[in-house]
Length: 117
Image (cartoon, rainbow, N blue to C red; front, top):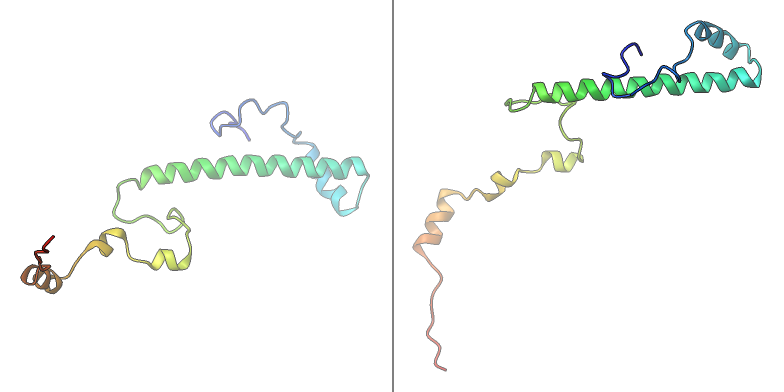
């Protein structure tokens, strides 16, 4: 939460929870305090989640840039897809034709028939 501008959160100082309030919130949550404190717990948790989300997005972007153009990419950065799509052949593999098939097609081309009109 220290460097909000680098995380892309803009001016966050107004919404940042007070550091002295955090230990009290933990205790109040266990002791089931007043409704105001319980609502404050929700706000603090949401703020923490926002900061962690921005931080993780930034880390993932940096790691994607680091592995750009490399031969192997970590599994966490690869597209999720479905299990079948991950195991399916690539378009390049699908386009490949074996030598035997190309020879057969070249040696026996389609026949051309002259049709009288």
